[in-house]
Image (cartoon, rainbow, N blue to C red; front, side):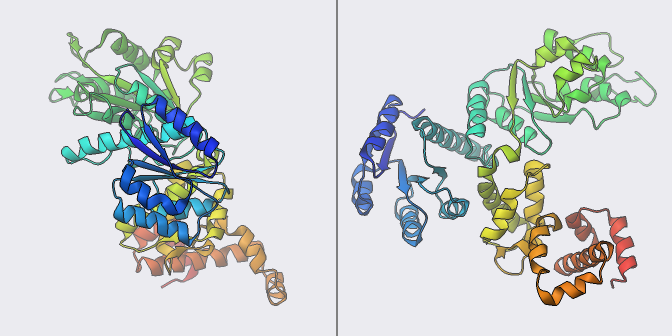
Length: 456
């Protein structure tokens, strides 16, 4: 995949640079060494590399200017930054300057090779998808963590095959996104990618949804109906929350996997299908098997290629990259011009454990951006759970102690809630439906609180 590429390496240690060069040559990559940073322009012109691996102490204005110069004048060159000091704010600043990858030292040679392979894979499929008028299938998988690198490596290896995959992970970690990436990087990418949440459809309707039915099979079956397996024929069927599948349908799914054929409800004939199954669950299926809630033979059939998606708290180094991505994404949606997040606010987000994972982070950034008055997300824009420490500091002054002494926790909570509702309603110009969504309460609950607080 890397054969024929050229990589320019800037490092203070010639020995470290030689280590990287030796590993890259194993991938048939041509390398050049640039010890003095002020030499980079002449080397870029003469060597014309595809990638520039740049070691820095920390991000300063000179480095930012250098990155911007390379982006402007050497658009064919992609930059990987390696920093000696672990600073998440520097990482965010580097990504804003269009470096495509960022590492804190020490960096293993294999990590750099993986980064190059990942980027080449993205470019490859991005070009193919652009020809079809589609988006880059990897554009929303934002990560620089070692745990996710293993996931990407697995995806690259298994994508071409029909073998069943089982994606494991907490809610909000991006299981459907990963399943779609597997489909889009496979030979089935031009065929349907069909998704179904096995826990969201009533049990008495799920069989018909999956396998279809014949006219007259039951009351209300006024015509033949295609099931989701038929709709996905030639492509991929993503069975989300597979742990919620009833035992009777587990038997039928096992037969589909073994025989590669389905039988509609009310039909006497089976039909051959060609579908790749990707299943996902946040449940522990081994425990479900032991308790008799999930068939052991189906579990082993699904668990041929297991992929575990780590929780966001296990890959916090990705949070600055994800925030940058969400700010750009939400700017388009909200027609806003937020540029960044303050270091204090970023620290609050890094200290949080994110039980809702990436989905919760995305919602938090969107809510915060709506409340922004300038171009930076501040602590004051974050939801209430991130402001507890700030509030403690804010109310510690002598002038405020007396006021707090006259307030109960209940009264203080009501005051904060009222102020928050007022601020959100002001930002969305009185759109109560939108305000309820941002506040993460029902529209009915918002109307009640508006009446309770006498908000006009």
